[in-house]
Image (cartoon, rainbow, N blue to C red; front, side, top):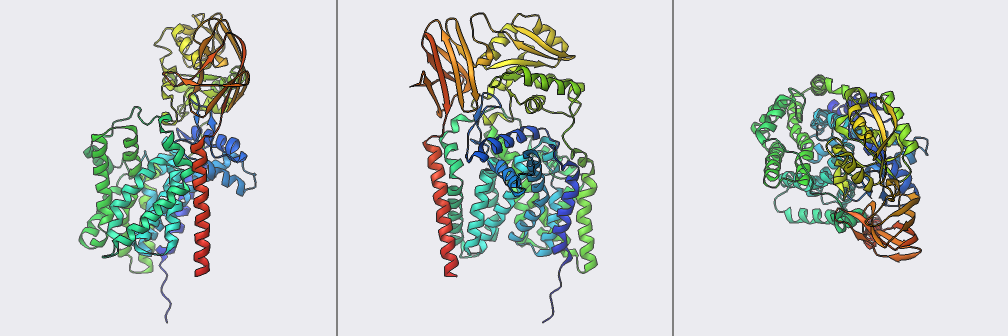
Length: 633
């Protein structure tokens, strides 16, 4: 029997794509963070998660570094953190957490074409077309999704890591529809659970995209069996992710699902942006995609779903968001663009593969695919670089903050007021950078959806619009001991008030301490009694175990500058006391007159234990089922 000719594009395409992705990301690899607006915030989350939770065998915990603190993985799951810890463990700890984070995230970018190739094969593309699709997957570059613009522009770390898991999950679901073998149920369940704990918006997108794509693969008369297998996959995924999903559902009131959202442009504006190369694809690539759509419409109608599905999602997503605008629906509308853009490029891969009738033709189509990635997206590669070096003044400010802000207290700074010469024209999110470098908590954070007190992030932005005394009262109640002021005018205005005292300046930057009113606790104590003179000293500022010495002249309620959670437990002089919640979400305690010792401890609750038990039970059942299947085979 003659040997079957091996397609150059089939095996060469994925290799070329991985090499091309490695070349694109090469300037960003190293032991320092890579560029991107949110990268530093994601890195801080990963460092805390790896070094304070994973290394201590914990699934979750309280993170005090942003806002008034929040449960670390309540809405943003541990996927990126676990992957970072896995990379570090694979190197036997030789890589720092920062370097392991870089390797995990950039590695997901490099490996994404292989996932795209798997998805293409799962959706029925032949090996040659799938190899070409692997290369073309790097041409999808929506600034609000995974890809070169999303990762190195906005710094969408979780989206990028989740994208690789998404294509594997969707590919597995497609195989489950057409292939009754249990292996795909296992792959699909594990991948879907991994997606849930990595990027929640992508998890919401997955069933919608699957509903638009999978029906095209259903064989006549076998739909019921396929739907049954998909249902089993969903149950498996829910069981594996229960340790995260169950606490989230139980405590969803502790995350900010209803916060301010941006307007999604009208549908026609988005379509125009796609065609002109400012959205989804680089300039010119959209016209090649349309050529692929035309081809499947005329010559390959069995692949028509690859064109209709993405277009249907774009229309439905815009319509749903317009009908019910919210932060969640905005995330679903935006984050799906990268996935639908990938599916929409598959018809172009089919067109190119049909044009290759010889080895020379296959080399040519691989070259065309590479050109469609490299040539139009060349200017965007300038985004790929290490994180910008901070100006000397900002570096010095971080050092001062480390020395003057007590452990447990916070600093605040208005982000919008920073002049270009201070942030170097490229250092986005100065509060996050200062928090990272100073190892001190900030009143702002990565995204407001992580916190039950998202409003606190805007307090510093009003330093120049409120009377200084009012700003001092409001910020001091939130545990802010110092403010970093980015302009000389604002520094002079605040320093003129007795409620602020300048402790450092390198114009135009200045750091000012908040001065408490006479007879009131210092902001760094985190205690704000509602009545009477009082003193409070924060003795222990551990993330989940806070200890105070308190002295009050009268019995009074006191607000603690920590976000309320039912997992906080208080004790006064060693005796448990009930906790309440202020109207704006702070912990509220009742203090007796005189001297006392207050303790606040954070601990897992029944929902955490139940979720972990379900996940453990699912893992045991899965192992037993696989063992029985292997023995039967």
